[in-house]
Image (cartoon, rainbow, N blue to C red; front, top):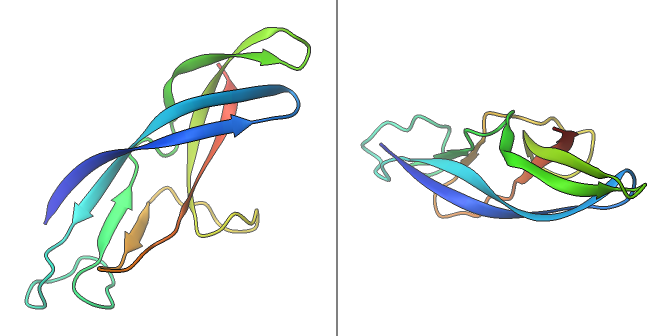
Length: 120
């Protein structure tokens, strides 16, 4: 198995109180690319050989340097984007996992990267 790295661009937009943000963030991704042969062991549960795992080493941490925002009262504040993890849907009742997700070979996998802003 090999590990590939990639980065996804994420456009964050937070509106309403107490501030508004429009900024692009780069999210580092690690893809554990597995052998796609039936004779090799799969480290992840797989429907067909062999599922891969995707995660972000930044999950649970602040992403990049603080950015400056204007708060609702016209003041200047610095905030950081903190990656919380992944969800299978956007319902607030679903669990957030920092472990990443398994993507079945030759299939699409939809996951949502969940984050929040905190004052720096």
